[in-house]
Image (cartoon, rainbow, N blue to C red; front, side, top):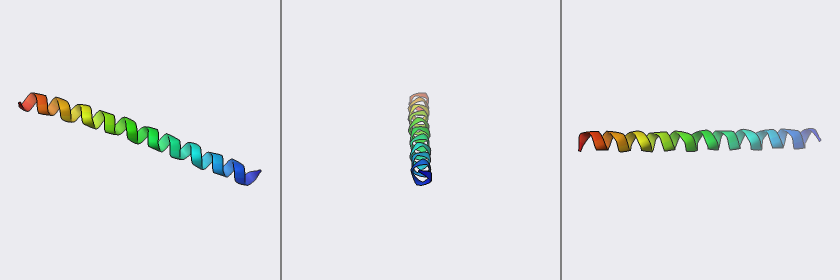
Length: 40
């Protein structure tokens, strides 16, 4: 059962990282949109 716990921890960590990356890309796209709107 130790292996399954480690596997679930890795999966949850990867999910957290992917969520964080998705949020970061959303923020980056919003910032680039605002920057483009400001310069246009």
